Image (cartoon, rainbow, N blue to C red; front, side, top):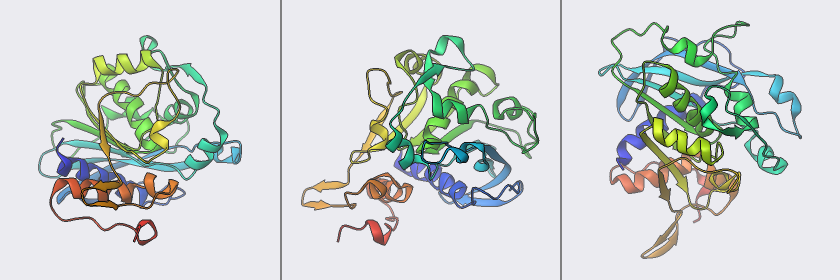
Length: 277
């Protein structure tokens, strides 16, 4: 695992988090930095948010969900997908139903809430506009495209997993690289095996104390490969690295902090509220 690259793509996801969900202004043309590299935003990604029993209205709202970017020097395309404030409510509801994978019949079944959001991913807010996958080959990239990396945190990790399989099966980007952080399980064993066959380069990163990657539970649901674990506990000498709380174990900031410890370079700051000291 190249933890430096994993940090770079997590920083792109952090850039997506910085856009308020209700801000529907397209960020096309904005310059970003992640991992010391410059990126240009090609388009904002929009979707309906995660509805829950506690907040069913959320599912009717169109929100900013992520960014399609291009690396200024290499031409690499990167798609970054953020999580949602509704994830704790999703855990509280604990109703995980399966629906047929909507874009590939052979891919089995996927979690219904994530799937409902995935099919709404668009690059404009116009009604009837093409899906993200349909629009991908039509986007106006300022330089030749060289590769595609898809990254996402939490709900964004589940959406990135669905997107990677769809992209591999239906676009010219047939060999995407995928980085997910704190992703829940996305589909059943058939989905996971189909994903493994078509998407060859996946780095699924999970904090051991994070509850979200352990849901929904097997054997009905199965994670895609391959898993890279982070630990919030240091054994030699023994000490706690991140506070043992649901929010702290799941936050992207905690993931960035723990990955930076493994990368061996500059340690990224941990949020004060999640410090165990």
